[in-house]
Length: 341
Image (cartoon, rainbow, N blue to C red; front, side):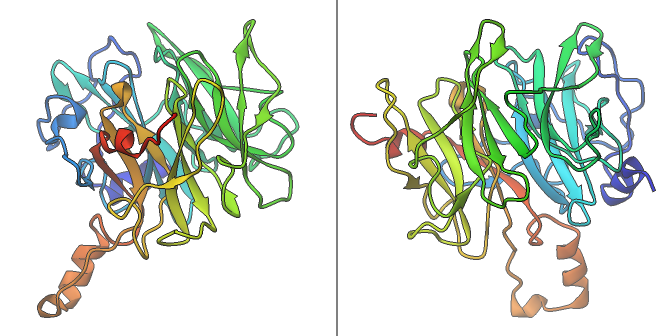
């Protein structure tokens, strides 16, 4: 069965198709999709405590992670995985004539047998970088590389492998872009489970030789999927093996000053990191207003609700132990910044 069919069965709300062109009109009816207007899918903005992002639309009970938002805030990308990543793809929704359209698979998807994940937009929104396992040349399906697709007035073009020096015969994933075009990403050597965060500067129209970031960023016993702020003043790093961790994978923040010195990693706290709730996909919205993060939290069932019906309801809802996307006011980030950074 095609991924699009599985997705429509799993998420009742997702039954439409729209054009990829930013200027075009939707080509299908809205059916029963709610009228959502205003920034961030018309959701009530959060305060200092994290809440589910767009429950029933983005956070649905499927394994959901990764966020990228266009500079004008009118387009949101996120990802879903089904069957332990058997099917995994990038979805998008956008605002058309004041209303948000139903999520749809991106038009440049590699199809059911390919993992497309971890979207990251360039500062001007004209390019989208993402992880893909699609074949390229002699490489078979399954090799993790970073790809890029460019947008024109007619919509998205054909994706291309970013190539050397960013990609190698190992794995490269979770791109994150700065304002000046520098790309941060995670790399592992072929056959190795050790992940390390690198960056590649953009200069003279090309990415430069990647440089391994210091131990403050590559903290713990393993780490991956690091998000860099557009001004490069901090990074959010999901890390394993830290002494003050709440669970196996926690979010840490590392600050950078103008002298290229990095602070020691700081646990982002109990509102974000919890026991029995791992997370490995951070993002901060354009302008630095909101912090988004993935977490595998499970809603508690009261003894009075201990029924088969309640279990079915929980299984088909956010908070069932699959990954969900949460968001909160990002002002706390500055509160964590140490002196000198």
